[in-house]
Length: 226
Image (cartoon, rainbow, N blue to C red):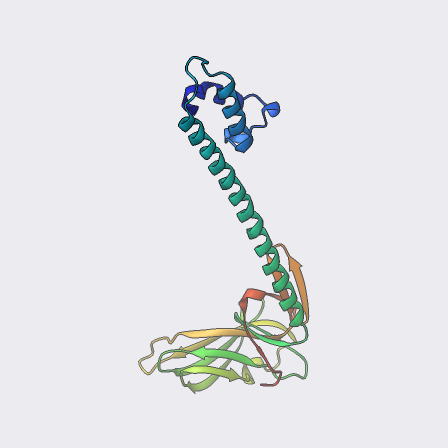
């Protein structure tokens, strides 16, 4: 059996490039076949291998070959799936050019002569809301009381909070407190027009108002003005 010539198999695995052995000493189908041939060539003529032993080793060889082929097929299939997903992401990102999107985030862009809009989700039972505008450095530059906001999604049009601010990218924070003064959970969204797309190793990135939004952060496509 194969174990009878284990020393010969180990020698073949370390014999170098001529033996066809794989890196790291893993035995492939070529090494297995060479080992089987070597065993047949060096068996004792007075005590030859029994037919059932020979059949068993041939079956082992067939199993090794099938496993190797299955592994190679699986790797090829995975690479093809990843390539297809990447192509689909690129096509989707390109189709978003010129469209308004809603993505997870807290960014907003002020444009000249264009009223800003912010989309938020208010949790709990709602509460008294205050909108805070921050510059790129995180410094507060505007604040506005919005009164009571019910739970659910809201499209806000800030006025006093952005009055006098120059056009450009900003951040915002919505602070909501319930009747007891406890903070209420808020979900913030970035709403912007897609101006460009950059394709990188990490996937497509949407360019909006001087900022970058990963395609995976997009929640929905919205109609301008709604």
